[in-house]
Amino acid sequence: MSTIKKQEINEFLIEDNSVLNTFRTLILFGKNTATYKFAFCHALMQQKPQDSIKYDDLRDDFVKELVNHYRHNKHQFVRGTTKLTDSIDLYLKGDQSETEWNSLLQVAENNIYNNVFDAFQNVGTGTIGDAYTLFEHDKKNRRIVLTDNTNLILENTEFIQDISAENQSRWNIVEEAWRSGLTPNLLVYDKDENTFYSESKQHERIGLRSAVDVLMPYQKGRCFYCNTSLDRYSDSQNDSFPDVDHFLPFAMMNQHKSITVNPNGVWNLVITCKQCNRGKDGKFDSIPDSQYFSKLLARNLLFVEEHKHSLRNSILLSLNAVDKQSVKSTMLGIYNVFKMIRGWKPKEFIYE
Image 1 (cartoon, rainbow, N blue to C red):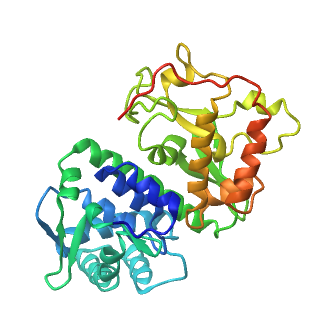
Image 2: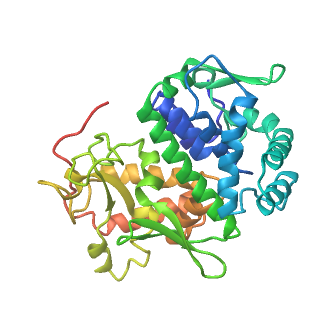
């Protein structure tokens, strides 16, 4: 049984009892003091199904990806420098020879593995339950022993692609939030570029990957309205192509002077299928039915449960809120402006 203490996160885990959702929960909500868990997830996705994996078989992919991110953004840790960052700096400034690489691997091994394997399956001060366990850490034999849960992922190319994309997206958000000094930066959607951006303390615009990459994991890869499965790799003409939708239409919100929040904020964006967004009988500029408002509110409260970075900060700032209760009251106030309008809902709903 899960010992995760935060109700919204625990519900996110147990309402979809799938291995893919277990990985999503850990990637999205696991505590971040360093980006090691993302590097480990990347390295794990390079493996084949097997009973166990030795440290040595993970470390090259782990450290290569960590160095690749560090090369472009040194903010891979919450605080200051470490022996590992010093070693990466030394490696990047040097000839990057095999000898220097092996030296870096040794430092990484001494500073990472005892922590990352034990912490990966934790969320806050709790952990996922036995039914969700992905691996056991066998310190004595310097290996991790995989469960059937992980091997189910490693047997499925589509699952590997989804987890890898979501892991990289989350990694990018965390490192960019740390780069901006964990200021309460506002995440804003740029429709033309289909991406989120925020500003650093120096007012530098920081891109945070596509809106689809950022939001789809929280919807478990499905349309916000009809629940059909979405494919981020599909052609834009395909019904499974993911669209970005303003839950409360941009034009309608701008008509009401009493509404002062930014309609382009992450709080008002969802990922939908093409049909729900702009197909026959699609939503277009309609106000969604109240059941979908409740769903959006629950998702935004889930964001507020996250550790301190851009998504949490953006929800609070864009709604002029300070906690979950004020998020709820502000969103209810905005939705009530349109409550006399008959709510839109899709003609069909896909049940899993």
